[in-house]
Length: 304
Ligand code: ZN
Figure 1 (cartoon, rainbow, N blue to C red):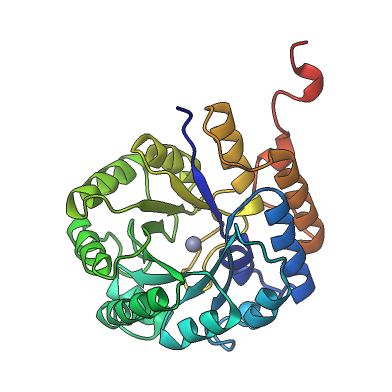
Figure 2 (figure 1 turned 90 degrees about the vertical axis):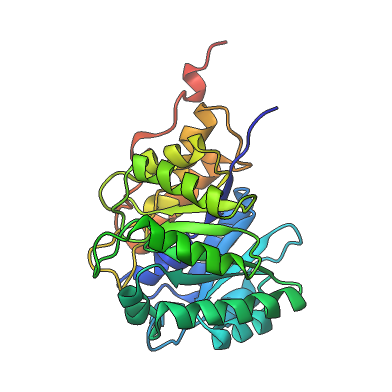
């Protein structure tokens, strides 16, 4: 049986929220519609956070109202508290992602409350989401290291994973929010999470800050993970994490998976075209490599 990996495209949220400028709503809508046309079926379209904190996401409701709506697409809204969840529900998200940071200091900087309070909020949101027929999932952020506390002990990550699992999420994502993780760490953490919460789906979220993103993605796939976050062009970062840079580029990931005969359902040419479009809109080159190098083999190079 052919293996497949599901890609959650996070460019419209994780990518655009750390852009210095604010992309107009129409640009975001075109970005998302292009992603849908390229075959992506799970897209983190926006976040429902205070517009003063993240002005790039102030038009969350407008984006949801204007994007193409298809019954087979999950329109994921990132939420950090109950107020954000209520907005995501009203805006018509059919999946919500909550983030809980493994480091208490980072959780306070990012969300204004400690990790315990965010876990309590998640448990309430998860049950409210299920009651509203919205799929809830949760990310454990800074699971591979914290910009303020440094190394995060695996035991601490596992403790947070066990507590968020009580909310019965669709899956738990392990996020290398600041791009410090290495493949051996990915392998170890996934093994430990499997022991701690058997049967739980695991997704991974990698940033390429230290050029280990694709290697980490490979380690996750080798460990049996079948859902990964990525952003087209590799745009992104985190405005609250110093020096964090982009996510792993979706098109680079799709290229690797295709060549490994792992299906993603994504049209690579359409995705590259979307990355090129994005470069034009942002007015600068994006970090992704495939956009520069091109795919392989090219049609003319294919054996007759
Ligand atoms: Zn991220």
